Image 1 (tube, rainbow, N blue to C red):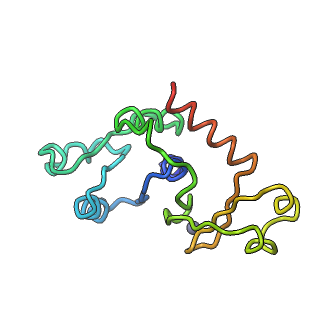
Image 2 (cartoon, rainbow, N blue to C red):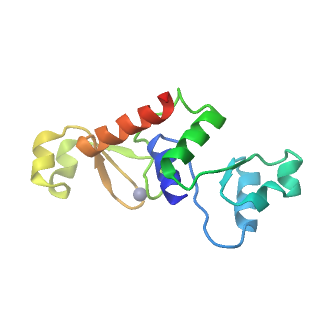
Image 3 (cartoon, protein in one colour):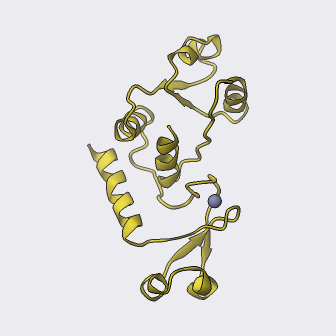
Length: 147
Ligand SMILES: [Zn+2]
């Protein structure tokens, strides 16, 4: 599920990741922030807050991230309004545009020479650029949403 969270962030969808046996914090957060719960745990689907329709939850069937993302995209109709690379994959924070000069000493020289567009996470200070890795991920997302 951690991988699914990253894929959703990559698509630009605000995604929180909860781990561990205690669901109460996740359920409370989902209710106050009006979030949809994506879970592998069938027990959550039986909770009154879910069966009553107060809280929307999707039971993720597959263990494989590719199948999981397909299920989420299909169920929530996420296939046309995604904006890749707007959120940090690690922190879920909106990324900030950076000029080439601003990142000069912070990216590998090869990257600096070949890339023009950069974004930075204001929390963990990771820098992202639209290199081959980015292009491969966008291609994969398109395959997810189109199939
Ligand atoms: Zn970050």
